[in-house]
Amino acid sequence: MDAAKRYFRSPAAVIGLVLLLVVIAMAISAGILYPRDPLALAGRPLVWPFTNPRFPLGTDNSGRDIAAQIFYGSRISLLIGGVATAIAIAIGTLIGAFAGYYGGWVDNILMRITEAFQTLPNFVLLLVLVAVFGSTLTTVTIAIGVVSWPAPARLTRAEFLSLRNREFVQAGRTLGMRDLQLILGEILPNALPPVIVYASVVMALSILLESALAFLRLSDPNVASWGNLIGLGRDVLRVQWYVSAIPGIAILVTVLAVSLVGQGLNDALNPRLKSR
Amino acid sequence: MRILSLAGRRLAASIPTLFLILIGVFLLLQFAPGDTVDALMAQMGGGDAATARDLRKFYGLDLSLPAQLANYLWRLVQLDLGFSSIYGKPVATVILERLPPTILLMTASLSFAFFFGLVFGVIASRAVNKWPDTLISTLGLIFYATPSFWFGLMAIVVFSIYLQWLPAGGFEDIGQVQSGFWRVLDIARHLILPTLTLGLIFLAIYLRIMRASMLEVLNLDYVRTARAKGLDETRVVMGHVLRNALLPMVTLIGLQAGTMLGGSVVVESVFSLPGLGRLAYESVIQRDLNTLLGIVFVSALLVITVNFVVDLLYARLDPRISAEG
Image (tube, rainbow over all chains, first blue to last red):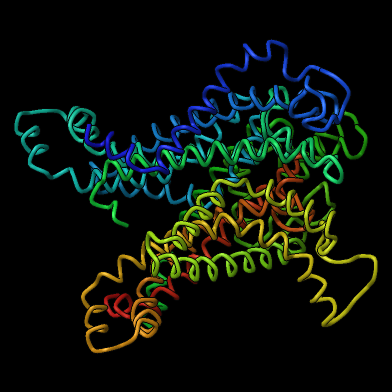
């Protein structure tokens, strides 16, 4: 409870939480506020924002409601951000846990693989994955998860290295617990908090990666995604710059919210570092 | 000399990593729909199965997978990256043509992010929890959350369309042929917006790390000693704190090299710069897998090179590292 109290004492963390709740509320209410397909034609193309009460944020190049796309886009961003992060953290903790617990040649091989993933620019790897497996929502989400695991793996490994010879682990070993029991049941719960905090960074980066991919028209074109809309707006950037501007602000706010919440959690869970 | 051998050893250790990457990506690309011959046939406007078979034989695509991989790696050792059927040139030539703009862009962005990250980080740490710190830290958070391609587009709207100060894209003015000094100036003008766009997120990261690292070093005993012997604040910061606070920043350059190269894919597309990143994007669109594999090789090589340089720099900043080696 102390941690929660500390969290709410920081204004930045509270602002982040409020912003994140707003984005989540948008994702939930999208279907209620805009029951029609957000990618269906709704009116005249390129209506400026605040000029027509039917389209508070205007319409895009082909006459689709921008507000509806923003609301539905929050679903895609949260979904891809959430699932890709879960994949990255799952792979990362697993590899980091085994590398850190066993050490020796297991560590050597796993860290070589991690290094290989870190040496190759992750956006380039993402391009390769999309080129090979195509760009549907599922493949893009998995691909983002697959390129984002090395950092959590290194973090988990470091935690395991410092925990594996503590008394409680030795006690477990004396009791005759198997390696897997020790890794999953004893060490992992203790190693997880910093990894969970780091998940906010992974999530922020995943949302940015997906929007960049969508902007390049390499993500799923059949869903209302913020990056897609920015890419579309690029064709009419000279005059109707608002088509690109509005979804960009949505991405900015979401990523900001996720990082603020992450930082708030970090400060609340590690109070000694707070003074920095 | 010791520094060199230390960094050289790490360089040697990265060769297996490089091969691991190449073998992994090579195998991955086998799952891609369509091969070089399909792309080539499409370019020729179709053809019969016999031609396709002959072509596959010519390119060695009828061999077994391990044989193809061995062939590829052997050619790679001879620095032969294969042939791009889309560009009608060897892949190595295509990549070499596209390398200069990317290296220029990365160097410029890195210098921009490093320099201003350092300056703002120092300012923020000197006024910790006062308004300059709050302002700089808030800006840093916002920059970190800004999608680079969106910032680039908005910069084009403001600086190229409304104010008409800077060009909206391209590497140089192709309307008039320039040489010498004027050409350099022209290219620099074209690179201002891309540099800001690519550097922004790194500026945010650097200033955060610099601030934290300054605060850490400022609390150490030797800084108290420096103050106690009567040095003024400027001297303490410039002469004693800065050098040690810089170490995490330098580490970060190596860690971020790959991210920066990835970021240039997007930035080069926004500003239509003829660089490596744009080539990567084009080769995905055109299914030019040979070129894509070549880019994977070259970008991994670039990251390894940057890390080698960082190792050298690191040893220079902190003499203890080379002494222990």
